[in-house]
Length: 361
Image (cartoon, rainbow, N blue to C red; front, side):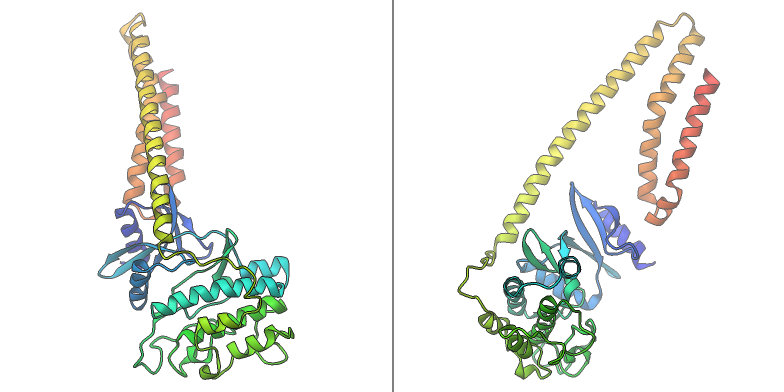
């Protein structure tokens, strides 16, 4: 069975409603909804599962939270919180180069996130402009599809991943990636923000920012030899200019739990309101049907009664039956089948109902 079909079955069994792909050219990642909360579903590679399990147990502030891992022996789907903002790549295109002060703020928040990942022995491996999202005036590191756990005794990564221009040399098999590899990528990102130019190769004096303060910081962060770079995110954070200026404090470790509680509480009340509205509509619908039945008894002949009730059935009952039949079909079919045939079903039910009304009339 195709992974996409298996993933859709897993989502359906867990009660998630697909809303549409996050990217127009790919079926996954997929936006999904459950109890009025919109999340992102992704198909997970086997070698990425340990990282996601650790992030689920130990969430990192300013990263998408792993809400659930849906598993089968041959398919795993992750459910992540939706961070719906503007990427650094988008901001750079619309706003132009960042000021040194704004760059310091981005660097501070990302270094705090990288240190939290290092504490969990996780290397992101794909830090780039399009994987940093500005959301509610904070900078979030997204997309852990390339992330891996660091192993002290390992000489190189088992999979070579990273984005050209942003990835450190060790991403291509020269050594095992570690926290210093993410620091290299961050240095490239910060240089892009200051110069307004995306990398076309390794940074050198010609492509590195001329800023007197930031130039040496970025040069050390992007040194080809990992031993010449900052050895930790904390060490680089100490070199960031303007540390005396107030910066946004890192959220407390239990912040994701509080956020999850608020989301659950809001979803609970929304669910109650929605349920109350549905019950009210069904009561009104029942009263309407009773009213139609009563009006039918006022007809003079049996034939007139049958015609009246038949017309009422076609106009008020048949569409409801057709709606629930379509919902049942949607659960039985794949998303591709449903997208292909749903409008034909709508047209067919409309034609049948109109034909019945014309025939009776």
